[in-house]
Structures are given as C-alpha cells and as structure tokens.
Length: 611
Image 1 (cartoon, one colour):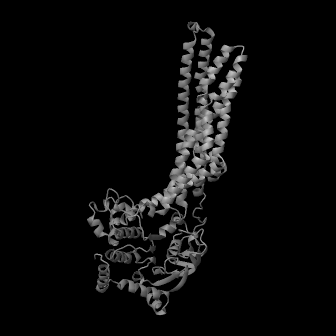
Image 2 (image 1 turned 90 degrees about the horizontal axis):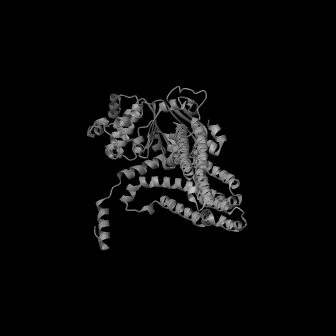
Image 3 (image 1 turned 60 degrees about the vertical axis):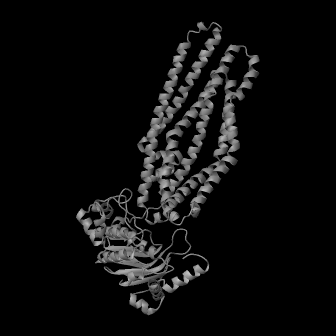
C-alpha cells in the first residue's frame, strides 16, 4: 500500500489515503463542474430577456416570455447551488477520510520506529506534521479540487459561449483570463514554490520552538526573563515575519496588482472592442444584447480565477505537507527478524559495540565490551557525554548498534521479537512522565490487566504508601490538571512502581535519583533493593554513593571503557573512578562556613550595601 502511494505521487498519492472513498472525490469534481455550467443558465436567460425586450421596444408588453425566462433563471441558480452542495459533500467525505487515514498511517508508522527516533525530534515538530500537515490536505481535497473542475468548466463554457453569441466580445473577455493565468503562474512557480516550502518549514520551527517556550515558562517567570531569553522561539517568529513580508511585498506585489487589475477591470478590455465593432453592425439590436450579456457575465470570471489562485496556494501547501509526511513514512521502522529467537536467559553482554548518531562525526560508543551476568547489577559511570545513556538505550533497541552485538540471554537483540524484548526489559528514566489519569492507571500502564491489589502491592514495594495515603481517593485519584500533583521524587517512585509491576527480568535505571531530595532518595534506594532482587540490573548514576554496592562498575569516557571492576578495586587502581570518587566526597561534604558568610557580609557592608 505504501509503495502504491509512493508511485501515485501528488494528488494520486493523497487520494490513495482516501481508500474506498476516492471515487467520491471524482464524483464531487464532476458535480462541481456541472454546477458551474448550470450557473451559466441565469446569464443565458438574461440574454433571452434582453433580446426579447429590445426586439419589441418600446412595446414592452409584447415580450410575453419574460416571466418564463425568469423562472428558468431561478431554477438554474437553485440547481447550481444544490449540485455544488452535493459535490462538496462528496469531496468533504473523501477529504476527511484521507486526513484521518494519513493521521492513522503516520501514527501507526511512528509506533514501528525505534524509540531513539523520538529523542532526536521535538514533539512539537512531530505533532505539527502528523496533525497539521494532514489537516492542510483537507482544504485541497475538500474545496480546491472541486474549484479546479469548476474553473475548467468555466473556461470551457466561455469557449462555447464565444461561438453561441459573439466570439469577438467573448475573446475580449478571455484576455484578462490569460493575463491572470500568467500572473498566478509567476507567483506560484520559481521563487513562489521555494517560498511555500520555506513557509511550511517556518511553521514547523515555530511550533517546535513554541512548545519548548511554553514548557519553559516556569523558568522564565522564576528568573524574570522575557521572550528574548528563548532565542530560538524569538528568531523563528522574526524569520517567519521577514520571509512572509519579503515574499508578499517584493515578489508578489507586481504580479498580484496585474492579476487584480486585469480581473476587476475586465470591462476595460471588451468595451473598446465593442465601441470599435458597433458602427459596422448590421443587426445593432442583437449586438447590444450580446454586449449586455458579456457585461453581466464578466462578473463570473474574477470569482472563478480567484478560486484558482487559492487552489495554487493550497496545492503547494499540500505538496509540502505530503513531502513532510513522506519524511515520517520513509523513516526505517525497527527491523524485525523473519525468524525471531527467544533469549535463553536474562544476562546482558556487549561485544565490541560501537554506535554513531546520525549526523555525528565521532561515535558515542566506541568498541565497548562488558558482561552483566543473570541477577547481577552493573553500574555505568563516567563524565557527562561518555556514552552511558547511549549504552543503556542499546539494550532495549532504542537504537541498533552500528558495529558489534548487544546480547540478551545469549541472543542478539536484533534477532529477538521487539515485543518480547520489551517484555524482558523495564526502564526507569531520570525524567518520567505521568499521564492525566488516575494513579492506578499510571502504574497499570506497565501491565494493563493488573488488578488493583497488584497495583497496590507494586506501589508499596516502590515505597509509595505515603503518596497513596495523602491522596483524597487513594489510587483512584486523578493526577495532573484538575487533580493532584506529585513532586519530582514522588513521580520517580511511581515510575519505579510501574517497573515493579511489569516484573521484567532486566531493569535499566538511567539517573533515576537525579532530581530526588534526600528523603525521596532514601525511599527510592529502598525501592531499588526490591526492584533489583533476582533481576539483571544496568544502572547509570552520577551520585556515586548509589553504585558502591554494584557487582561491577564500568567507567566510560568519550565512548570507551576506561576501567572496570568493583568499587574497592577501582579505588585501589587510583584511576579515573578514584578521582571521580574523591571529587564526589568533596562535593558531598562541602558546606558554607560561618567564616565565609561573615567575610561576604563584611564585603557587602564595606561597599555600602545591605546584608
């Protein structure tokens, strides 16, 4: 299906998403064209009225067919409206199905991508593509395609009317149409096409930067900053404004002036023609009738051409949206082995593993090897940027190793079914998210079929009894807006409860105590003890006190293994770990002495300030 959409290209690719409702688009376009032709009916009736009145002038009562023509004109007008409405109903049904299927297809494809894909892309950017780009296609399919068919029908009708009444006056009416087409082609091609791509890119950037800004508002308020503190957001707005002003003011001004002048001044084209032709007309009454017809009919032309102009804009936006949707759909999903293997145990092994992020020059992990036996705890420590989190993310296949192998139970993780691998691994990150659901639902996210008793047991094991006790409805209390809020340390304990409830044999802990206060850290450490019992644990920590009891410590520096061993053995080596431990002890014992405070106060007072 994806290959079929890719081959279709453009409108065909979009309509492929409409499925069995694709035919409604073509039906709607046909009805719109029919509606446009029916809308000519009243003008033709007016011509007949003018013809009969001029023929019997000044004996107006002799024109007996006037009322009949009037009713025919009303009938044509009503029929045109009804048919156009039916056409829009058809195209809207197809457009809504198309946009819905685009959202479903992109969302479904995102679920198949490695989790690392989402770390590399902002949520605002993905939301804009999945939701905003799908919505932008609705305008094209629901309104613009029927308008295109209507405009084509208008041109065809004009050509027919050229011969039916007076081809010379009809040709004069077509001159502004040709000028309008040329002006719109100038705006929509070349720099115009590049602008639409830049315009959609600017919207994505503003959406991305705006999301980051909204999330950072608490920081802005605390430090009394302005929007300028969020340089990316400010620059995204300014760049968008300058780009739009430059395009509209510099590139589009002249073509649009020509376009509007030609369309709204249409009478200026055929009036001189009429004045030149009038003296030589043998049947002057018929000529005046034809002139009256084209004078009235010319009002249709600007409306139809304006619709075409918006069609060009919508088609460019849809083309760019489709390109961005292709960007998501073209991302390689997580590879699934055709003959998946089951892990023979719960041990973890890295065999000469290397990994480089897309676009990076240096590898984040460079020829790393270590072994985590079943039921043991391995700690990854080292300077920031050393590759600790990257190593941890390779175990559950957030990314696949560029070289080497990551083994779980003796099997390369790439040969394990992704669902089974996820069942084998539980994670606790340094920043965890709670849903706007009840406490029970948040914990039950790890295992949806868990009973309330199992949820309570997991919460108790994660040292969350005090959290449950303070909530008004216990585990049935809603969290988030309109409900209760938890502190950072409490959120971490709830995340641990999730991991405990999942009961996975392998646990990955990434800086799980990073934002916890001393009281919460003590409770989290107790929860760790329960979580690690009988499980294989890979933990990352900057607080070295949390890894002292690990069975093995691997020190990573610049993506490589600098040293490894137990806490005591590494201290005895006097290497990088020993230096980090000494720095940690100094930081842990550091405090502001009374002498330092007094000296600071004296310095401020000496400058005439207040303490």
